[in-house]
Image (cartoon, rainbow, N blue to C red; front, side, top):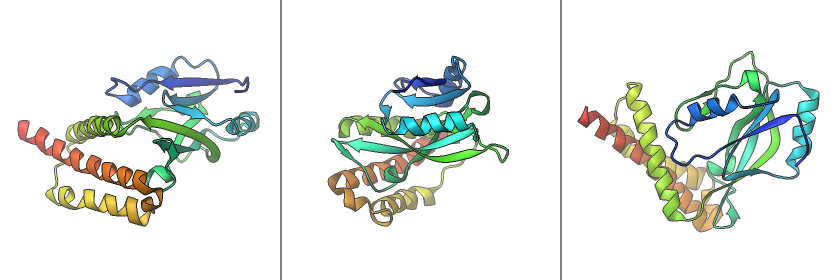
Length: 208
C-alpha cells in the first residue's frame, strides 16, 4: 500500500440495517480530499495502487468506479452478475453522498465526472453456502422494507417470473454455467433473493 493523500474508509457490514447512512457517517471522518470506501471483506489489489495514485495526481474526475471480483470457495466468479460488477467506491469527499439503505449507491448527477477505472477490489464475502444464505435473507428483507416504505406494491407477476428470469440471465445469458458449481450456486441464490424480496414485501403488506 502506497502512502497517498487518500482516506480509506472501511465499513463492517455486520448488524447494519442502513448501509447508506453508515457510509455517510464514515465520510465525516475522512482527512483528505480523496476517499476510498472498502467493506471489511474486501481488499484492493496491489497492482491497483499505481492507478489510484495517477487518478489523484491528475485530479480530473469527481468519482471513480472500480471492478469488484467475487471469490467463493477459493475461486473467482468470472461470469453472471458477480462477474460484471462495477461500483463507485472512490471519489472526492465533497462529491460523494450515499443513498438507499441496502444495495446502496453513490448519488450521481450530470455535473459529476465519473471515471471507469481498472482498479480491482477482491471480495471475500461468503465463506460457505450457509453464510451466503443468511446474507441473502437479510438483504432481501431490507430491500422489501425499503420498497414497502416507498409504496412499491407487491406483484404476483413479478413473484412468478422475475426470480426465474434472473436465474436464466445469470446462468445462461451471462454464462454463469462456465463457473461450474459456483456458477449455479450464485445464479440460484440471486434468484432466491429476487423471490424473497417479493415474499417479504407481500408479508409486510398483509401485516399492515
